[in-house]
Every structure is written in C-alpha cells, then in structure tokens.
Picture 1 (cartoon, rainbow, N blue to C red):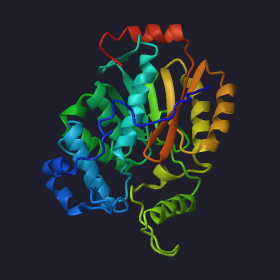
Picture 2: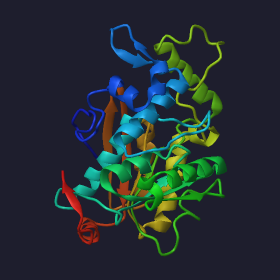
Picture 3: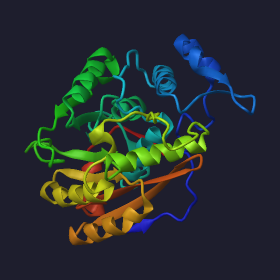
Picture 4: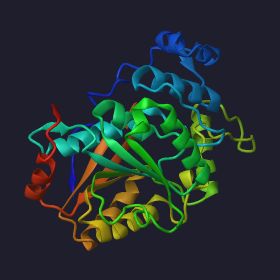
Length: 322
C-alpha cells in the first residue's frame, strides 16, 4: 500500500481554496443573508453549528459554482461541507490521470458509482460539473432516493448523467446495484463512520464544544450537518463497512477500474490493509486530504495492472491536462 509523504492541503483545482465569498453568495441566494454575521475576527461567516445555516451555504455554493438551479433536502438529512467533497472528486481525477498520460479523462464515458448518494447528490453534482462524468447513485433510504431523483430531474446538469437506484438489501453494497453488463471507471463512498448512535452523538458533542456551542453534556445536541441512521453509523462502524466493501468488490473485480472509499479514522487503515492483502488486489493507495485542521483520506484499490488500466482509459478521447 502506497502512502504520500507530502502534507495534504486543499486540492489545487478546488474552487474553494480561498474560502467563501459571502457577498457573492448572498447575491446568488439572498436568503443566506439571514445566517451571515461577523465573526470574532471581523470576517463574514455563518454559525456552522446551525444546520439551516449550513444548508443555505451549501445551496448558495451549488448555485454559484456547480451549474445547479434547484437543490433542497429534507430536515435531518446529511448536508456535507462542499469543499471536502470537491477534494475527493479532484483527487479521484488525479488517480485516473496517473494511468492516462497525466490527463484527467472527462466526459460521460467515465462512469462513476456513488455508494450512499444520499438526498444531497453532492458528489454527482461536482463530478458532472467539473469533469462531465456520468453517475449511478445508490442508497438504502427510499426518501433519499426520491429526493435525489427530484434534484436530478430539476437540473439540466444531471438529467442525462445521473441515475438513482434504491438498494433494497441492507447487507449489500455492490450486489443488486452493479448490473451484469455494466463497467465503472470508479466507485466512491462516504461510509457511515460510527459504530452506534451514541458514538455519532459523542462525536458531534465534541465538535460543538470546540465551537463553544455546547456548555454541558446534557444540553440537547443537533447534528450541524444532519444525517440519517445509515448515513452516520452502522454495526462495526467504517472498519466493518469498508471491509465488507473490499470483500464484495472481489465479485465485481472485472467490472470496475478503481474501487474507493473515504476513511475517517486513521486506526481503520491497518484493518483495510489486511483486507486488501487477503483480497489479492493488484494495486492500492491511501490518498491524504485536508480541509483546514481536519485530516482525511481515501483508500483506492484495483484488480487491473497498469497496462490494462491504460488500455481501458485510452478508449476515452476527451481529457484535460493535470
């Protein structure tokens, strides 16, 4: 398993490197103004502990930067920070460029499977807007799929590039979603990181305390980025989820160029490394990422050698230089 030794930072192609231009965003979405105030440093900002403020910020960012004309999600559904999600997409593009003469392959020929697309469809939006990729988004939550489908139909960007599929088997990841004759260039996933509701709550309380928004442990906690059960926790946490994903990927090793997943906890990496060896993958990488003080990473693995990957990617004639 290969790991970069460079200190991670926001990706060079990430549109949010310089922070948020709130004046511009308010002009795009006037409702955002109700949630923007000066912070302790005299700069415009929002209360990131307020779910509605985060939702309005995301809405403004999607309108302003990603060709979205309609976007809305129900209360309580995951509303992730967009810069971090964009970073994952850009690093995935670089992963493909390694086997494509340092050019990012673009266009609908690049098929991506988003495991756990959620109601927000953030990854397909960014992937379609930045690189023109096509997506299939799966989720076990029927409401999430319904909302994701509504957003898809309401935006020209997504209408012909995103298909949403309900995963009816709670124990399955790729099974029932990847059809027999389909081939994917990439899979991506933001797995449920926590092993229980209690773990998720404790993590949120820690974040709120750092923001000065939680004065004592009995105070009612609101998840600032939202999230349903399956979005936040599962039995065994991310370690078990990604292990299951690796095991299941063996069955589809000829139908996907690169399997990938975010990894929140550093201690999960030893489990992943062991599972990848057991799966006899041809190549794997841990790619570090960072947004501010938060360190993140994703794991990528493939059952194709480099020559095979180069041949598969060479069929795509539309590309941009890294």
